[in-house]
Amino acid sequence: MRLLEYDLGDRVTAFSSMREGGVSTGNYASFNINHYCGDSEENIAKNLSILAERLNIDTDRFVYPHQTHSSEFRFITPEYFGLQQEERKSFIEGVDAVITDMAGVCIGVSTADCIPILLYDPEHRCVAAVHAGWRGTVKRIVQVTLRAMAIRYATRPETLRAVIGPGISLQSFEVGDEVYAAFTEAQFPMQRIARRFPLMSVSGSEEAQAEEKWHIDLPECNRLQLIDMGVLADNIHLSGICTYTDSAHYFSARRLGVASGRIFTGILLR
Image (cartoon, helix red, strand yellow):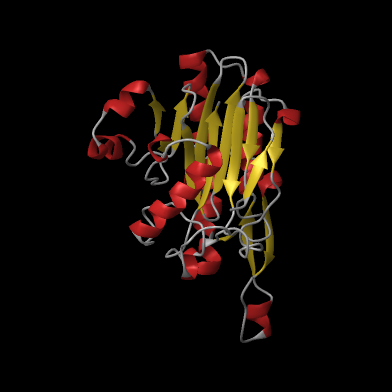
């Protein structure tokens, strides 16, 4: 299988999965481990085993939630692994960020155009994985997560290392006026994160072809949130990969539909 790997330092593994190297078919081809997008459980289990072997951990050491575009987070502790399977599932239901200081546990989030973010505190040896779609970005989930790390682990933003993984780009993320309004109401710097472009799909009259729509820069929104919290710009790695334009290598719900695979962006303390 192929992974897009990130260098965050010694004794930590960080990555985003690519489409190649799994057993899933159709719009799930070929590497998908997300349980909530319609892929077969048999293929998911096989793919998870492939990734577990690659990372040299057991399959039950993966933790990735059922995301609902919330600003909810959970700490993954040894007590989590003492729960029954259904209790574990319930604990991370409706959660969009997971945080841990446990070694040998791979936490992660699933995306297919939304923005995955990884946070690593090398000083206190803790990590987080964050799912930031446009709703989560408006709710400032990455800042919520960083505050939680600061309270629990004494994380200092100036020492934090961050990855903003593959997601939809400004040029590809065409939105309606209601989405633009949501960012405006949340007091984002619209002159920095929004632009108008011609309609991506047009037909009919010249007037229709000349129509423009707002586009939002989700990676930049989240980068600015990290900087506002005190994270150093040099410590933020931007993948620069647009899932919509590179859907051959990364899943894109806007390209393939919601019944398609998901990228897994994970982080693992060694």
